Image (cartoon, rainbow, N blue to C red; front, top):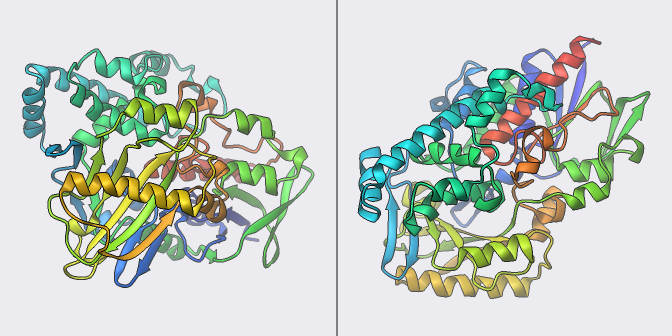
Length: 492
């Protein structure tokens, strides 16, 4: 009789796990509490505007391509992938911005303009970053990280030294570059990992290789096209989706999951992968005696930031801005202090604006503009409509000044999304947006375990476990969890 596996949630990790298991001959059912698949990568449409609700950066294109190829497909079977040039723009102040070019000769020229002689160090920096990327992607991220013993292989240990696991990102960057703008450019990608450069291992300069060498891409019509692609792969493999059906309980007997309980009924199962929020799954769904961790453990974790997001549809075009725009016209150290050290709503936050309609005419009506605004925030803060509106105007004051154009008064569509929404929609712990911060003490085997240690047939996947936050790591996480579960199922 065909074994039945339940997947909780339908984010990238869950979709990857579901497709992998179904391809191996198992009956797979995915239970999703929301109305569409994709988790944080849901899509919202209103009045002709199309918004990606979560991830907006497409890096590491080979991770997506490798996944599709396992099912006899390629990226172009699902969407057109376009490389952005410039990759993004950084605003340092009024009439003071820097475009980050896609080509290496132009990038070296930019470095030389800002710091004469620095192109040599850029080549050195990126050569090291390439090594870390290739070793990291080939040796580390596909490990289940059950134990430190997985890393005892001499070759991996020696590579670990070369990977600069014990030097922080800030020290690494600043040993090579003295120009403040170049430092900010090179430190920026680690913000996606949920920690400051001072607390992020220099290993993660591999993100700079992904950014500057492999490029920043855009799937035409939006990031949700990836979700649609992965969902189609799943359905082609026979996966069954149960939308608007939340898992509320797990029945365990003799250290094995026997059934799951949802808002619509109870289903017998032979195994479970939870791609849902790890903390919520453990503390609210699993019986206490079967949990890997207690509440004190979760409270001691360093979480990535949450975010205040705005989805804005404008009745006109905005000149000058690019597809991706970073606003570094404020004190980064102060904003970081208000996220990580003394959590508070920031006094003058850095922020990010995505304008996908600069690249894609399908995401907004003709002559209109699609804006996505993100303000990083400490998780667990008080979240009210009054605070959201105050920060909307705080950021728009600066945005309008920096781009020299009026935005307020031209909104056809406006929606905010913040901590309470992350909690309500995804059961996100403290309303965090990206999972656990990739600090040294939360890297590899020091992350929450992918295996439910007291349950024989249950695994976890997603941004709160191995290998960490981000879209490509989440896809890999789902594949790793599925492969580990396959070992268990084949031995029973």
